[in-house]
Length: 391
Image (cartoon, rainbow, N blue to C red; front, side):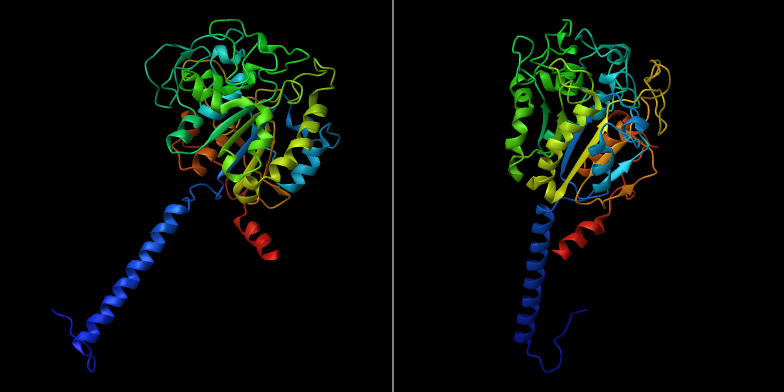
């Protein structure tokens, strides 16, 4: 059936009106499409586009966040400014397996559990990845088909950097970019020197062939911590994913430190007091940032979130199924100050959260069906809107 012009409207005028409506509709659709292309799709619980992670060392929740904590800035001031996750857990013991899990979803194997005192190749006992995305076998440097969140981000045109404090200060130990000992050699960076307190075992990126096999690429992304201050100055110079490892003193690992500082929570808290305000003042953080401050492991073998180890592999926490309760503090324009979550999370949850923010698939145990990313127990999207309206 043909549509006829309304009574009193000439055919010419009716056609002109129709063309006008069509043109307006097309114009609206074009604007909407352009807006959709320029505005990232929100996949996670908040529209975060810049994630900052600071990893500290070896403290249980009750010590770090207790009433008489030696880290009052973290335990009291920062938790009041953001969200406290009192039920956040490491996934294994000792250090390295936790760092590796944070960026790849790979579970501990006997070598990574011992912090890879020999920087050795990973030797497979089965080809490919199993049904849980795990490489079966043991060793330190994962084959190139075992991917990290860094690889995922680059594949979709997003940026990342690992900022390693002290890396390359002693060039006879390691380079200032993509620093690590030679493959097959004893890892001499496990112990700090007064002038260089960097440790390979706290730099997860150098345990993946997908990253280190291209030295130029690795050198652009795994850099000395001194680069951070300059990169924070501008939105376009701040990576989407910023992974910060303080040196063995400032992450609390050593106490006292090789350079005479007190170490432990005292030095870790001083590091945070200096750098957290700088991160929070950066354009990237203020626009759409999230800062996560957590610890690699606690002091027991407790776990959460239905954690599993490798099929046929060791118990992830040596004495238990996990890496112990550490707690974490999260800061963001999308978090209402004073938030406390009762949900349980671990390092795989952190990886899944980052992947969700950027619309990435889930690696390894970050894909576990029972695992939850940080959700509305942490983020309050109305808070930033309210704050903008108040200014």
